[in-house]
Image (cartoon, rainbow over all chains, first blue to last red; front, side, top):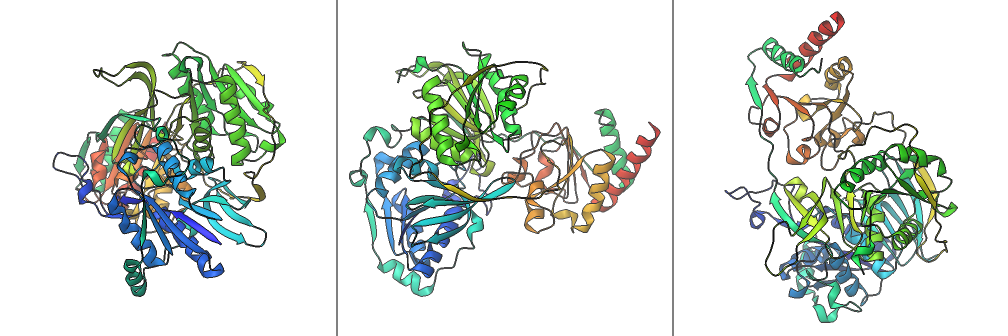
Length: 263
Length: 348
């Protein structure tokens, strides 16, 4: 059984977002990490490796430095790694990104493709389902559990919704988008780290992508275009009092609620 | 693709178990608003499901001029492939200029799949939609297009905000965050033009099978519907101590909600969580009690009409968004406020 996991290198927004003196986001100062949902997806794939001996290949698209997350994935136990990088792929929206990754996946064999539900930089959750459509695969999004029946060639996924879950069965090959609930990612092992730096990372550029038109790649292939981007303008602070006693605080709040006709 | 052929604002009228989701009505409210600035004023709801004809009148009351209904047993419960086929077929047949979909667990699966199939752009999880020019200002050597959908959305966990357009492809598609757009006051007895359409369904390799549906039994109130929210953070100290928030909420006929830290500690269920990874709320009054105000939390509540913060830390970022802030001990202030409100309301 072969599993491909799509991962992305993202700036860590959780450990405190850094701003420059002028108030804009300081991306350079933020740690680059493996996107958390993708890491949960990788963990799910590695469990399939533990259980069924699945071969796990990780694929990422990005700048050459994104190789770091591929090494990390191999140190956790992934067998092979592919870095898709090329200048002409830059500036891609989710449509062009998914076309690119689909172009890379057409070179690989797989029974399952796993992506994270969403990346913490863009928060779109679109690339997984869009890849599935480009490849003509069934998709099950928001996976909390994955069970594979190798013999039947099917996968059963616990698919989360707001107020329920579905147990959904799909024929393989199939694409699944992973939630963090799939499992706590394992640590890299010392031996794994050593091996990871011995192993080769396959690097693919534009020419290696299969069955993709130039018009569907990069900035030019992106139907959406940015009209304006800015760091969020914070709402102005209102009034604040330091209350010496509870009574003072209560009188103040009560007064405001009356003034605003809440009571 | 001739862009001029695409006309009108369409919304995906999400229903689950033959009940319209609130987002469907919110999208209709926004669609009506957008249509005012377009040549085609007609708003169309696309309703997919099995025996869902009874929902048409509600869609009309909330602003749909026309409802396209695809009624088929294959559409009984949500599955990506038949829903994608139905919605993509409607797009190809009726050519909307704009298509809005809720950014729900269904919409965020359906939207991207459909956008890939019909080859158009999709902007995720929008919190603001306007009609305007693209580029916003005239750029030499580039045609400025008018009456474009300008889709605004937060990214980077709410730290940045971007406005996105889709000038060369149709429909212009967006998923829209639930709880942000306003429904219109329903017009009782309003009727919509009803169009029955069925593209035909043929099972293929992409069809999935639902083996089981398990509904979460939830006793909790919908915090997105509440007019007054009394929200607690880690500063409340313990799950038991939420009782003082419950008391305040009760006297104001409000509902208790909470921050992510509270859910992560297992004090409250996730349904009550406000913020980037929880729900977006915009009540009349939002009490932030013992909530520090991380940007991810603020992203989910800053549109509230009135924000009142109580926190012992004078430098807590919540005070940067609060209209009225009190630095003090919530354990003393909250029960005393409840008592005073109780007494005052009893007199009225």
